[in-house]
Length: 113
Length: 115
Image (tube, rainbow over all chains, first blue to last red):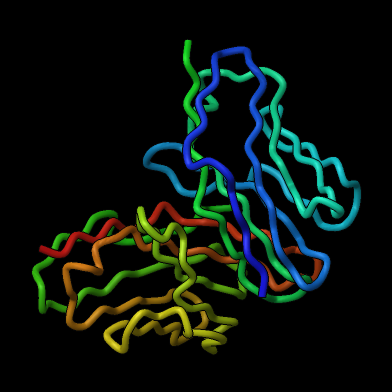
């Protein structure tokens, strides 16, 4: 069975600083990995996905994530935080095939002016 | 594409009552998923459908929970009878059947409060 661990339920950064949100997965087969973002009072939106092509994946709003098989990680980064990035971020994993996503518990990102 | 529509947005009910939540997925999406979002557990999968067939409902917490998708389009999640511990946000998601299309699209959720 696959699972996802997000380290840090709350991360706070200053505006303009690097954003790093950590995600580690466990899977018996090469996984498909996703990051979703949830803004207040809105549904989850897809930020980016890894589906066994390039290991460095670029998403919307300047975010990117790198798949590292040796570390079983898929950390999300953004070089310079913006106030509008304040939201909750979820990492998710799926096996190849028609299986549902399994989510981490989420990391709330706060951006300080 | 129109997004996923969930109704109601907020439901307040008393213990012992029957609650019915509705989800209308994105048109053409074959798979439909019901999740429950709580502060303690995060997003938990309750059940999911392919067309009108339920594929897995092992995540349903008790027999008080049931889900249907009678014609393969909209779905309902019923809690009968509701208990205080059922208070949470219930989120519906859907995705296409295509190979290689693994991302799920999510609705805004229904916030259920059981008093």
